[in-house]
Amino acid sequence: MLEIRRYQAKDSEVVKELYLAGNTQMGEMLTDAELRELMSTPTAPFGSDLDDIEGVYINDRGDFLVGTQDGEIVVIGAIRKYSEECGELKRLRVRRHLQRRGLAETMMRTLMARAEELGYKELVMDTIEENLPARCLFEKCGFTERGYEIKGPFHLIIYGKKLNKEGD
Image (cartoon, rainbow, N blue to C red; front, top):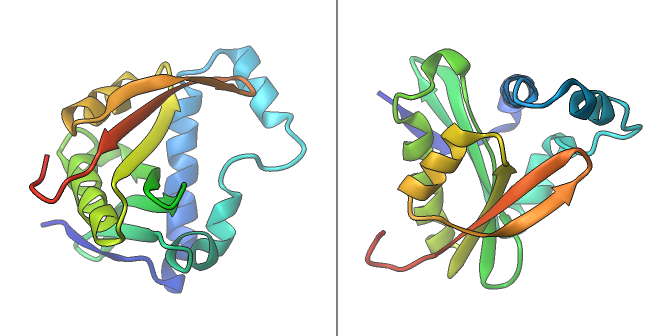
């Protein structure tokens, strides 16, 4: 049974490990040249927010949640303030051996409900173009493509969803 709760400082190392494992998996979707470009970046362009989860997420009209099974963190996800009316879903990761079992969808739906509680009227998120499982999940949860962006070696698809109190 999945139990979802707010991030606690004691979760820091496990959250970072799960995040990096997800990046490794996404790296498998990149070409060797794209992966080399990412690895040659002098500063960590992705993930530095995990050094200050409380400041970046929890204390700035967002949230960071972890899902546990049998006391082990198996899924993570966050909401970050994007604008006054829009939140951004970030850092959705599931342990590789537990993927495709509904954990990410459960976390996404919990984050969508939490975003409404925080007063957001809309959510945005992105993923690399090659991440077909994530794209299918986003669309299953009611997100639609809003545009494209290039960040370094990544071709990102931007997704968005209007929120409402009645559900999806």
